[in-house]
Image (cartoon, rainbow, N blue to C red; front, side):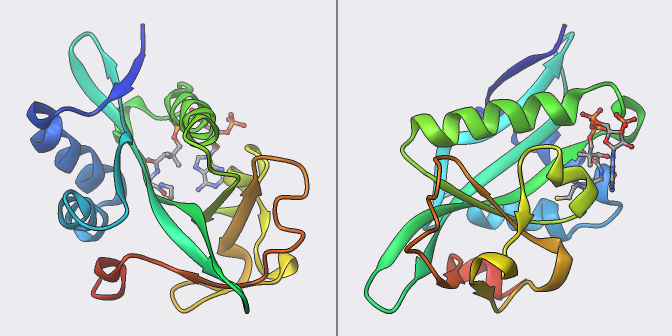
Length: 170
Ligand SMILES: CC(C)(COP(=O)(O)OP(=O)(O)OC[C@H]1O[C@@H](n2cnc3c(N)ncnc32)[C@H](O)[C@@H]1OP(=O)(O)O)[C@@H](O)C(=O)NCCC(=O)NCCS
């Protein structure tokens, strides 16, 4: 049975491995390492999927802001969603996303941005961020997506998504 739980310090090596193997490169694995302890990192939203004592998947949401003309509105960005290649297509990604979005709401966030495959994220209520009046220096086009966790959360929130500094150094 898959258990979705908060990452603890002993998991960090395995989490690195999950990101590395899922993406086939170091970029996401190293971004996660840099984010721990940096602005925007929220331990509650760093989640592992464990089965039989083995870490098979990982999800991280970090705090970002939407800079409108009047204020900076807190939001979350999906930093990474990764499942070990051999464990894919068994629902682990979906479980991590479901729990992540639930915890995002419990932690008081109404907006989640992601970058990734539109077909996959549309299953979780994501739509194109550009259509909602959002911009980003890191993202654009169909891979720049947004989910509203409460109805009309974006009605008065238009502007640039500002990520923690470490994102801009990737
Ligand atoms: C994307 C990913 C996290 C999905 O995890 P998973 O555990 O396989 O997901 P689930 O089992 O919950 O869902 C599988 C479904 O998602 C679909 N899916 C997986 N990757 C997809 C993609 N890139 N685009 C569209 N659909 C995709 C599968 O085809 C499958 O569809 P089906 O249920 O209709 O057969 C996993 O494939 C992965 O780690 N990929 C590499 C890293 C990555 O691209 N992460 C996402 C960007 S941040």
